[in-house]
Length: 184
Image (cartoon, rainbow, N blue to C red; front, side, top):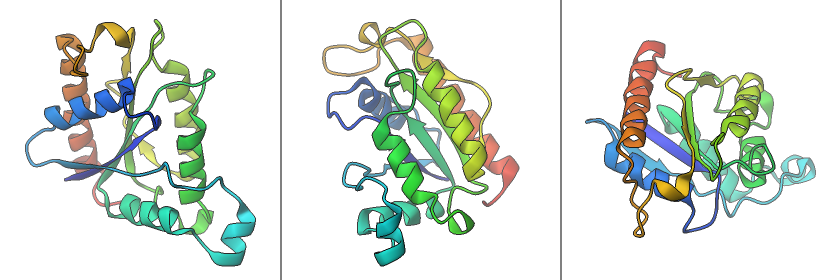
Protein backbone atom coordinates (compact mmCIF):
# COMPACT_ATOMS: atom_id res chain seq x y z
CA UNK A 1 0.00 0.00 0.00
CA UNK A 2 1.29 3.45 -0.93
CA UNK A 3 0.35 6.60 0.99
CA UNK A 4 0.84 10.18 -0.15
CA UNK A 5 1.40 12.72 2.64
CA UNK A 6 0.40 16.37 2.31
CA UNK A 7 1.98 18.50 5.03
CA UNK A 8 0.21 21.79 5.71
CA UNK A 9 3.30 23.60 6.97
CA UNK A 10 6.19 24.60 4.73
CA UNK A 11 8.52 25.34 7.65
CA UNK A 12 11.40 22.85 7.76
CA UNK A 13 11.40 22.72 11.58
CA UNK A 14 7.64 22.52 12.07
CA UNK A 15 6.15 20.07 14.52
CA UNK A 16 3.99 18.74 11.71
CA UNK A 17 7.10 17.89 9.71
CA UNK A 18 8.40 16.17 12.85
CA UNK A 19 5.06 14.35 13.00
CA UNK A 20 5.56 13.21 9.39
CA UNK A 21 8.97 11.84 10.42
CA UNK A 22 7.28 9.92 13.25
CA UNK A 23 4.70 8.58 10.80
CA UNK A 24 7.55 7.29 8.63
CA UNK A 25 8.96 5.43 11.66
CA UNK A 26 5.59 3.97 12.61
CA UNK A 27 4.35 2.69 9.24
CA UNK A 28 2.87 -0.80 9.31
CA UNK A 29 4.69 -3.49 7.33
CA UNK A 30 4.04 -3.29 3.61
CA UNK A 31 3.19 0.42 3.62
CA UNK A 32 5.26 3.04 1.83
CA UNK A 33 4.87 6.80 2.09
CA UNK A 34 6.05 9.82 0.15
CA UNK A 35 5.68 13.51 0.83
CA UNK A 36 3.99 15.63 -1.80
CA UNK A 37 5.68 18.94 -2.58
CA UNK A 38 3.08 21.68 -2.27
CA UNK A 39 5.31 24.72 -1.71
CA UNK A 40 5.86 25.40 -5.43
CA UNK A 41 2.17 25.43 -6.31
CA UNK A 42 1.02 28.90 -7.40
CA UNK A 43 -2.05 30.53 -5.90
CA UNK A 44 -5.17 29.11 -7.50
CA UNK A 45 -6.36 31.13 -10.46
CA UNK A 46 -9.02 29.66 -12.73
CA UNK A 47 -7.75 31.84 -15.59
CA UNK A 48 -4.46 29.93 -15.54
CA UNK A 49 -6.31 26.62 -15.60
CA UNK A 50 -8.57 27.76 -18.44
CA UNK A 51 -5.79 29.29 -20.53
CA UNK A 52 -2.93 26.84 -20.06
CA UNK A 53 -4.06 23.94 -17.91
CA UNK A 54 -2.52 22.77 -14.68
CA UNK A 55 0.93 24.17 -13.87
CA UNK A 56 3.60 21.47 -13.67
CA UNK A 57 3.69 21.25 -9.82
CA UNK A 58 -0.10 20.85 -9.79
CA UNK A 59 -0.09 18.20 -12.51
CA UNK A 60 2.58 16.27 -10.60
CA UNK A 61 0.49 16.45 -7.40
CA UNK A 62 -2.66 15.34 -9.27
CA UNK A 63 -0.74 12.33 -10.58
CA UNK A 64 0.60 11.52 -7.12
CA UNK A 65 -2.88 11.69 -5.58
CA UNK A 66 -4.28 9.50 -8.36
CA UNK A 67 -1.51 6.90 -7.94
CA UNK A 68 -1.71 6.72 -4.13
CA UNK A 69 -3.83 4.18 -2.33
CA UNK A 70 -4.55 6.78 0.36
CA UNK A 71 -3.72 10.36 1.25
CA UNK A 72 -2.58 11.39 4.72
CA UNK A 73 -3.00 15.05 5.65
CA UNK A 74 -0.61 16.21 8.37
CA UNK A 75 -1.26 19.81 9.24
CA UNK A 76 -1.20 22.56 11.83
CA UNK A 77 -4.17 24.80 12.44
CA UNK A 78 -3.89 28.42 11.29
CA UNK A 79 -6.46 30.94 12.51
CA UNK A 80 -8.81 28.14 13.57
CA UNK A 81 -8.74 26.57 10.10
CA UNK A 82 -6.81 24.95 7.25
CA UNK A 83 -3.45 26.54 6.37
CA UNK A 84 -3.69 28.45 3.09
CA UNK A 85 -0.94 26.46 1.39
CA UNK A 86 -2.81 23.20 2.02
CA UNK A 87 -6.20 24.57 0.97
CA UNK A 88 -4.61 26.02 -2.17
CA UNK A 89 -3.15 22.62 -3.10
CA UNK A 90 -6.53 20.95 -2.60
CA UNK A 91 -8.27 23.65 -4.67
CA UNK A 92 -5.88 23.13 -7.59
CA UNK A 93 -5.98 19.32 -7.49
CA UNK A 94 -9.78 19.27 -7.32
CA UNK A 95 -10.28 21.33 -10.49
CA UNK A 96 -11.99 20.57 -12.76
CA UNK A 97 -14.40 18.85 -10.40
CA UNK A 98 -15.45 16.25 -12.98
CA UNK A 99 -11.86 15.06 -13.37
CA UNK A 100 -10.25 15.20 -9.96
CA UNK A 101 -8.30 12.45 -8.18
CA UNK A 102 -9.64 12.89 -4.63
CA UNK A 103 -12.99 11.31 -5.61
CA UNK A 104 -13.30 7.99 -3.79
CA UNK A 105 -9.81 8.31 -2.28
CA UNK A 106 -9.37 7.07 1.30
CA UNK A 107 -7.89 9.86 3.43
CA UNK A 108 -6.85 10.42 7.04
CA UNK A 109 -5.93 13.54 9.00
CA UNK A 110 -3.63 14.29 11.88
CA UNK A 111 -1.88 17.35 13.17
CA UNK A 112 0.09 18.95 15.95
CA UNK A 113 -0.50 22.29 17.64
CA UNK A 114 0.59 24.27 20.69
CA UNK A 115 -2.76 24.39 22.49
CA UNK A 116 -5.17 22.09 24.26
CA UNK A 117 -7.43 21.58 21.22
CA UNK A 118 -4.67 20.34 18.98
CA UNK A 119 -5.88 20.74 15.42
CA UNK A 120 -9.56 19.99 16.04
CA UNK A 121 -10.96 22.99 14.15
CA UNK A 122 -8.64 22.51 11.17
CA UNK A 123 -9.58 18.85 10.99
CA UNK A 124 -13.28 19.70 11.11
CA UNK A 125 -12.90 22.21 8.28
CA UNK A 126 -10.81 19.79 6.23
CA UNK A 127 -13.53 17.15 6.61
CA UNK A 128 -16.01 19.67 5.19
CA UNK A 129 -13.77 20.04 2.14
CA UNK A 130 -13.66 16.25 1.78
CA UNK A 131 -17.43 16.26 1.26
CA UNK A 132 -17.10 18.39 -1.88
CA UNK A 133 -14.08 16.57 -3.32
CA UNK A 134 -15.70 13.22 -2.46
CA UNK A 135 -12.70 11.89 -0.55
CA UNK A 136 -13.58 9.19 1.97
CA UNK A 137 -12.14 10.12 5.38
CA UNK A 138 -11.19 7.63 8.05
CA UNK A 139 -13.38 8.48 11.05
CA UNK A 140 -11.27 7.12 13.90
CA UNK A 141 -8.91 7.14 15.57
CA UNK A 142 -8.53 10.89 15.46
CA UNK A 143 -5.02 12.20 16.06
CA UNK A 144 -4.83 15.72 17.45
CA UNK A 145 -1.44 16.22 19.02
CA UNK A 146 -1.83 18.78 21.79
CA UNK A 147 0.95 20.75 23.52
CA UNK A 148 3.31 19.67 20.75
CA UNK A 149 6.34 21.35 22.30
CA UNK A 150 6.22 18.83 25.17
CA UNK A 151 6.01 15.74 22.98
CA UNK A 152 9.12 16.10 20.83
CA UNK A 153 12.74 16.11 21.95
CA UNK A 154 15.41 18.65 20.95
CA UNK A 155 16.26 16.58 17.85
CA UNK A 156 12.63 16.67 16.67
CA UNK A 157 11.81 13.06 17.53
CA UNK A 158 8.34 12.28 18.86
CA UNK A 159 9.03 10.86 22.33
CA UNK A 160 5.52 10.81 23.80
CA UNK A 161 4.59 7.12 23.78
CA UNK A 162 0.77 7.53 23.96
CA UNK A 163 0.96 9.82 20.91
CA UNK A 164 3.14 7.33 19.06
CA UNK A 165 0.60 4.60 19.86
CA UNK A 166 -2.39 6.59 18.55
CA UNK A 167 -0.51 7.47 15.34
CA UNK A 168 0.34 3.80 14.83
CA UNK A 169 -3.32 2.89 15.48
CA UNK A 170 -4.46 5.45 12.92
CA UNK A 171 -2.03 4.11 10.31
CA UNK A 172 -3.24 0.55 10.93
CA UNK A 173 -6.86 1.74 10.67
CA UNK A 174 -6.02 3.51 7.40
CA UNK A 175 -4.64 0.27 5.98
CA UNK A 176 -7.83 -1.52 6.97
CA UNK A 177 -9.91 1.37 5.53
CA UNK A 178 -8.14 1.10 2.16
CA UNK A 179 -8.62 -2.68 2.15
CA UNK A 180 -12.30 -2.30 3.01
CA UNK A 181 -12.98 0.35 0.34
CA UNK A 182 -10.96 -1.26 -2.41
CA UNK A 183 -9.35 0.69 -5.28
CA UNK A 184 -10.43 4.33 -5.63
